[in-house]
Image (cartoon, rainbow, N blue to C red; front, side, top):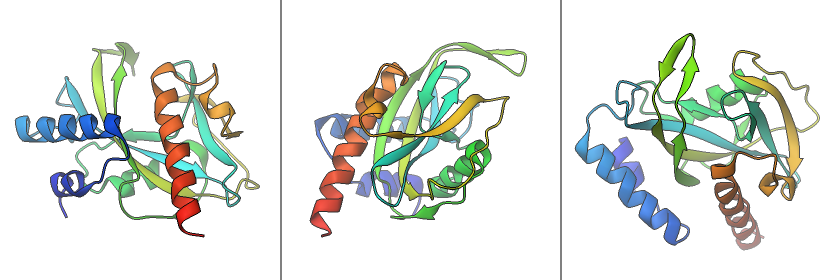
Amino acid sequence: MNLRGQIESYVPFDEAEEKIKDYLLKWIDTFDDVLTRENEFAHFASSAFVVNKDRTKMLVVYHNIYDAWIFPGGHADGEENLLSVAIREVEEETSLKTKVLDNSIFAISASPIVGHIKRGKYVPAHTHLDVVYLLEADDKETLAFREDESKGVKWITFEEAIGDNIVDFIRPVHKRLIKKLNVKESTNL
């Protein structure tokens, strides 16, 4: 199924995601380059909500641009298979191998990105149209990180995931992810 079809069939978790879903579909319908950074206004990214087997921790990286912790992810860069992008980004940013818990989209968000310097060039402020997937990894495995993108990687508790050390705009997304995971886990028991 193409990206538009995946977004269209996605069932929003709450009112925020209903609005975000409409927003993502409008971008897809308005621009033909939303999968690439050529669209300087907004483009798709893919992130991973990586949890441990006990469902008590999540994986975060300390992002250089935001100067705070955030879940792993990255640009689609033309690839429509955003699950594949999320898996690759986790491995690149943390060195962890993951298990996909659900092939479908777990959450969606639209995140403001401030203007910044990347590889010596200025990147204007824009929006990441983010698709998030639910993955699992072993929290006992050795972590590594890419110094060109982050200052660290670690497992944090769900309580820490909404604390002051988390990127401001991502705290509500973390809250939604954790709440949705709890609902999913309680209905699968």
